[in-house]
Length: 122
Image (cartoon, rainbow, N blue to C red; front, side):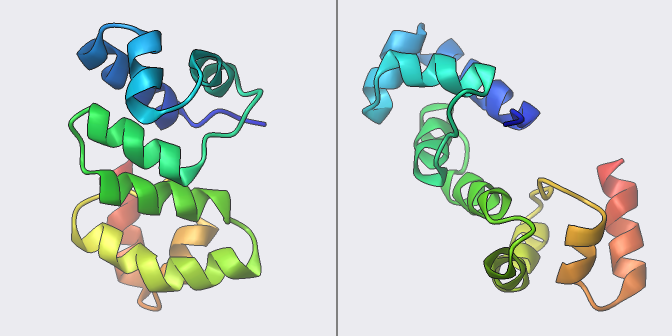
């Protein structure tokens, strides 16, 4: 299981605000060991927990929840439908998608927009 770099950054930001992993875990209602497992990739962080971490970190929980949900279902038929339903709203609100390339192309039918977004993300 690979660890998204943005999850580690989110965990670090939440920890910086709460003061410790223990306090972060308590704030989102999970065991402290979950945070350690998320950091080392031995446990997947649910979209719900990502949203709670984002709130603790002072970020927009809704956007992080959508990104985590899209990532969770990436490469599946359900993921394709979710990208079509939710992906455009993320880009319109200024949030970079978790992945670029083929998955991002599925969101847009207009190729120049995809290339423009790739340039922004790079």
